[in-house]
Length: 216
Image 1 (cartoon, rainbow, N blue to C red):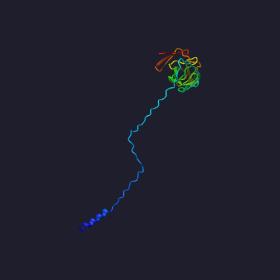
Image 2: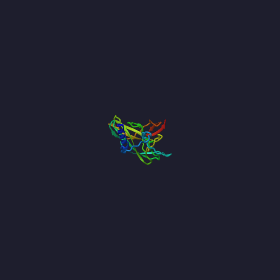
Image 3: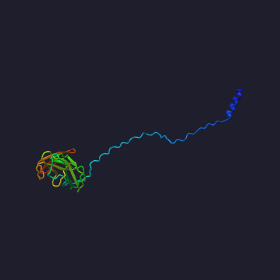
Image 4: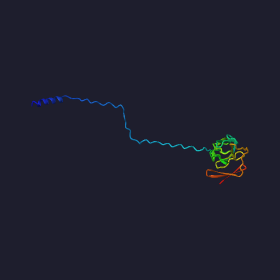
């Protein structure tokens, strides 16, 4: 009984006193984070390579007439002396004397004579009636001494030959090494030359420097 009484007194003291436990509220976070709803994953956008523009062309009136005239030889006058194997650029200045506008469907084509590495044809830049245009070809002088002449013709969209003044062609004439020079205009009697244009094979016959054309 002596042991039980002190224990009861001790329990009474405990129930009479309230023990307060302090709980600390955690401080607000320094950074506010939010969760976004899941969406589709980003995809890379591929951009295509721009298509290179085509060669310039202009509308062609119906029933227009093609004529040209040679204004001057801008480079490499007739009889220019070259070294064998020398590369050079021949440039002619032509004037559109007709009523048809010229564009890339017109070209200057190798016709006959000494090719000297000339391409089959070179397209013209846009040239309206009354305007002039410079047309150039890259050539290489032959390695052997002598006189060399390359004949070129101006062609329209359907491979028809465009008259150049009173003639139907223009030329480049050079002398290599110790070759001799003949100042006379070139003439080709009964000379034939063929070349391809698109899907048409066109044969030319030159007689007394006058050009005849027919298609095969």
